[in-house]
Image (cartoon, rainbow over all chains, first blue to last red; front, side):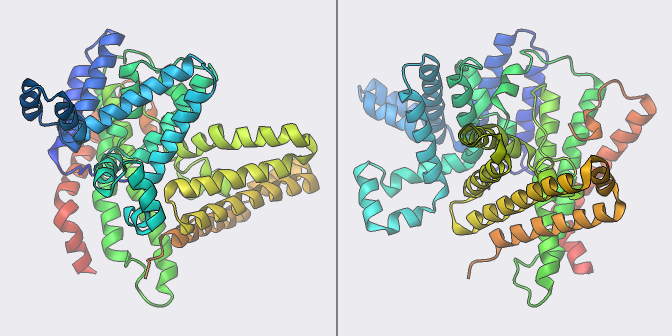
Length: 426
Length: 45
């Protein structure tokens, strides 16, 4: 998963948050607020990615070297990010005009190509002579790709790509209008969601009010509380688990089993801490920020687990992969094959979900494990419902012992899948 | 929304002070334990 180089011990993030709160909260004009929020997001990107050498570009411009001046601006991290946003905005506008499927296909392919460049290890790309030749002929030399990759890592491109896919789809289907330029910046690159999501749905983004309600002392405390809770989780609890219980799976013998559970705990503490900080920051600024976790450690099966863990991702998968695949299959087979269609939809969704995390066999295996688990849970539930009838099935679900066993089994399964994905490479 | 923070409405003054105190304690713990404290706890085991 992406981890942006935002260090919460550095003052940059907090200064931007303070400025954003002071600027955004008093604004009562939706248009002004939208532009101010976009300016803040771009300024933060400038801080993280580096701003262009404007003085040098100006000098070149005065000497008449327009091309070189443009290259100087575009060559900086901020310049690249701005060009990306501009391209995304133009693609969305073109998709809205509905001139055939070409803009949608091109937009989708561009996102996919960037995603592959982002995820594949650079060395893998250039180790293969054929691929190297192909990339060089497309003008993508190693030296050119590297700055692009740095920008994509810094902005958490995995999350940006999913937001873009959803905006493209909903715009194409005519459910929501394409965003204007500031809204494109605000939807794709909100500075407080860069580090580790969440993946805000485009419909949620469009539905949020143009102006936030006034920030009361109670709301401010709730926001600060959430941030403090996140910092405590990340820098105290997760750090203690990391220092005292994790060895990178290098400890011999049965400790691997113990470490697997502690690793799962660490992932939860670290990842949910980011969400706490993000949601708290969003609350302070009056920017709707989706939740990502809802006590996943009490999930009693994998379906329940994915309703509680990385919820913004699982909801994205549900809307954009599971439902379309399931409906397409149901149209062909009819309702008698509903279970089979759901199983196929789970498999496609979670294999792709694995590849979204990392483009390698381990994460494909992780996806396959979760797909197999989800298919099993769904089938088991269906069989139980048929055999027991509604009343006995509900009694079965409410049984305390069964519930506890189910929770333990689910947690061990999830932890084991993380072990498969994270086992150290020799 | 999953947590109690998502509840809206004004917080009574005494709870406000209590919760603010807990925020300050957490931030102080982050400051003290965040960088060197983890190592200290580790050595203690």
